[in-house]
View 1 (cartoon, rainbow, N blue to C red):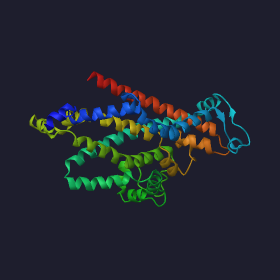
View 2: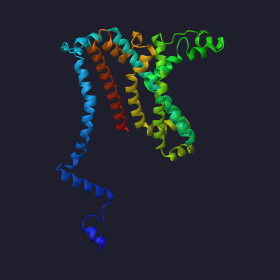
View 3: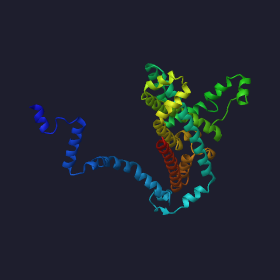
View 4: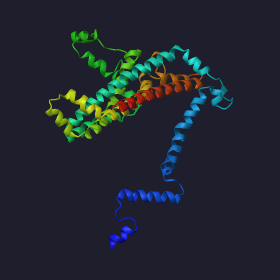
Length: 338
């Protein structure tokens, strides 16, 4: 009797997902909205928050990049003057812009590559360790990742300080013949690492690499946990070595993870600012500028040129959008080929 009455009400033989679907359909009808419109309606609060926090300031920066905005405009004594493309023309004619663009691209290419390689290697290593040891190592490396960018710059600035830095002290401990063989010199006392643009970027690469690879390693580890161990056992039986196993099993299955990590690393490394600011002590060494530092120097110099700084920020954003769109397009094409 119970089953018959339940079936008569339409709920006896239905599965749980089917019953949930029917309930959601009834709620949609009760609200007067089509069922397909419900997800989009639920997204509206999030979209409004994103528009308020991100979209509106971005639009303001784009508008400012076409204006003359200085102290009179900031204080409200004079309205912003519309300049058209003049700010962009001036920055493109400035040699500092092109040197900053070169530094930005070279730094991002090197740092993203090293971060992905080191993070992947550490992630694979963590997957081989016992659970207790893996947890211990993860806590250790994530402590570096959790350090704020300004603190990262302070730590590495102290390490490479010309007078009190531990790096110069450690290099002076090497035997003279070994130091000369490796570096071409024996005495490292007072070596000014942070005065030259090339050595500044070497230190910056180490700074960002130290703080970035833990996130890559933990993400790769999470992806490896989802790969069935039977695949690796079969590869071992077939006589596949570690390198071949990685490229034939691990890498193809973790492609989506690597794609997301690559895009995030490109975005983060293209707009590095705080660490560089601390290492060079502010916008002082123009040869060591990247686009973020150049934008800051233009916007807050004396007298400030907010319009020029905004134009540089817009150019940096457009470059990031182009690089990201190209990478995503290549990724989608490769998935379609497969």
